[in-house]
Length: 272
Image 1 (cartoon, rainbow, N blue to C red):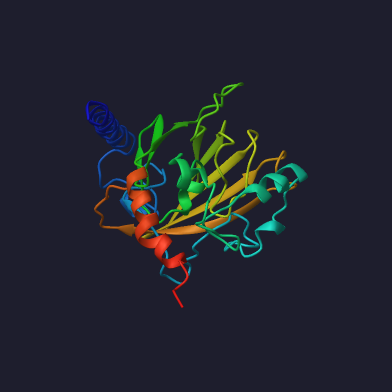
Image 2: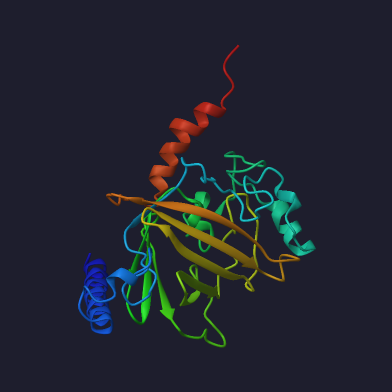
């Protein structure tokens, strides 16, 4: 609880400091208001404020199971542009989603061990995200598993980054888009819900753009020369949500209860 309160206080003070900097840069609130573009703050910085809920209902909604835009629902996951190494790893996967889905003896590291889903798989879960923007860092908060990332702005990756679940992330603003560049990701995670693997050479680019007041676009590009013969990407959308943010944790007891009460019962053949 003490750690959580510290994080909240740091984020609050950082947000207040950022607001002061923006006011100082832009002058009075009325100055330049007519020139302000949708999705941008007064200083020309992308406005990512709000709570964002994945769009599973609108005309642009795509419930991604794969980041390969040629097969977003993972109906043909074996056709992804994998190297021989990745193809062999993929054959070992027993995912709970996609064309090869199975809940029987799955080896999904999230379902089996409560491992963090990592980047970019975390965006495939139906829970909200939130941004806290400061001049030096942007914090991305994820409702799923209650994890958060610190994206260092206008910085460089270390020459030898530590390998972590969420990787080493640096960011910048390109016009109306927030661009996040991530390396140093643990190869224990999967890229997606279909079980596609990745190596420690994975390089992920995330591009967030506020399409309008109520819609956020996320474009993800995957580059991993050890695992894939080419780069590939996909796009998904989020809607502005009134909240609230719920408690969504990975707990062995809850997963066991779900397995016994839902999965086992639906997979047991009826008695003749």
